[in-house]
Length: 258
Length: 242
Image (cartoon, rainbow over all chains, first blue to last red; front, side, top):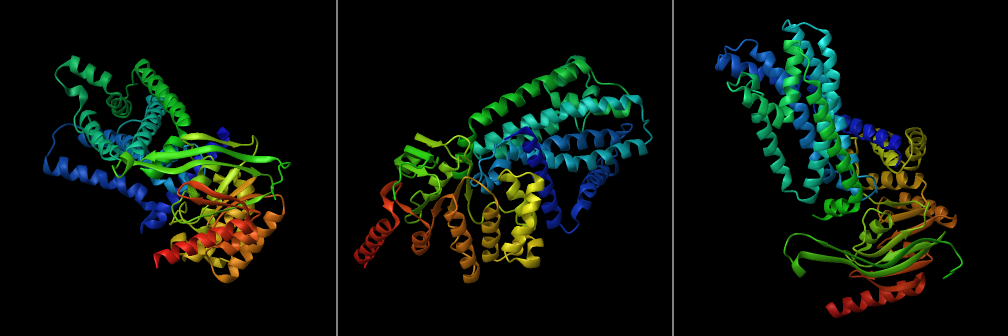
């Protein structure tokens, strides 16, 4: 399949899925903005009203971390099930199996666009300045996207081979949520060595921290580190594409019979 | 009937397919779906495939369409030729309209968006769906779904059409219309593999017939004779059962 046809299909499948989803829900597309707004409300109640957190600017800190994390976790979780959920089509047409997770990721990009718009507006509303450093969001989001698609392909393969991986991926997302510094600030740890270790060992922690540095502290991320993360996940993505191309029919058999 | 001068479209050479279901049922959980199946499909012919449920008919079509790979033997599609599988039911997105589903189907079969949109009017017209064409597929009756699936399939152009049970549903009026549309395609130079339980249709549409039982070829030959021996075997089995 030519790349242009592949990309077109990926986009059409994503948009159709969004349309189907909106048609199923009473509030339709309103949910795109409503859901992240509800996140803010929940966090406000828990951390400000109940726990009375004193940390300065805690809510913006939390929002940026959480809403950026949601992109990763939702995309990868949904994409992991994409081949299996799409088995009706898998059994009908010989299309590259990467198309299913890639369309799922594309679908979440549309949703995330609304979430990011809300996140940026919220940050500005809280009085943080719009600086030239915001341009660093572009490479940061590109690297974030490369992380999403490579993990999406890994997840989709694993779940296709054995359904048992689906709950494991859910658990792993929970693990990432707690270890990537969403509710706590990696940089507030006492031991600088530990800070360095977490930001190096967990690329997601680095990326989430990057969003906060840019938006809340007007500081660009460490570009060398960022580019090396991008290169690493880029290599993983290429490897997965090759594996899935080679094992295309094996994955089809697994999706149809397991 | 067996005109070997015609170009070969697709060849199956001693094809086996088995898979491991993971659950220890029998034979260590391995299912043998197809066993030593060999055949040649010639350009312009229509081959019928008959047999009871679960003997490997759909799997055979999936191998021909390049959706699955054989565990043994080889399936060779002549280079440059395309094969497409048409089935009912699965594959539709329930919350999308018939129109959107048709558009997506056509694009998945390789059409560009423009080409696909050009098909839509034809599909709308032929399927007799009227305004329902713009309603979600979940509101459709099974007959309406069948009409949409058949029409979408009919409008796309491929070298080998693999048809799985698609003519056995819908009301009598549409079935007649579908059958004659199918006949038109077949009398042209369309190559067709046709799976059906309705032997009368197979007899009308196919030159050759393949009888499959438990993953093995029982008979492959002229439509008339294979169908006769199949009917005899089924009747005999029924008598024994009684």
